Length: 140
Image (cartoon, rainbow, N blue to C red; front, side, top):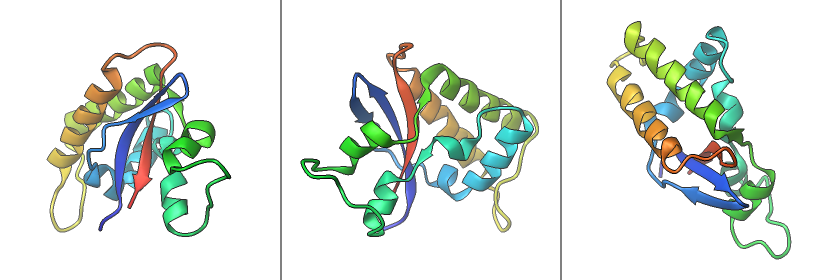
């Protein structure tokens, strides 16, 4: 089993997860974070929630009464307003596409990163409202 990102939205205390694997975004998260900071955007890593990862690494226990990491993430997770998330994803995508940014040493995963940014952006936009929040959950 590999570690990946899943796109999630939070609205009215309920988490909806796309449950699609964003492997390239996870693999290149540090580079995406550096790019986002250089572009004056919200840092990419700041919207990557570690609740599920910490639970699976036995670094975090669920509080009494909770049955899933999703419940805990809804209450204590790293979230960003959907408009800010869309600005981040659009800004990264635009810069990466225009400058043909390379991802990877042995093979270039540029197209994978762009495709995953497009998919995450589409998910974030679906039914977007000012009350919604977005994050990427790190899952393994």
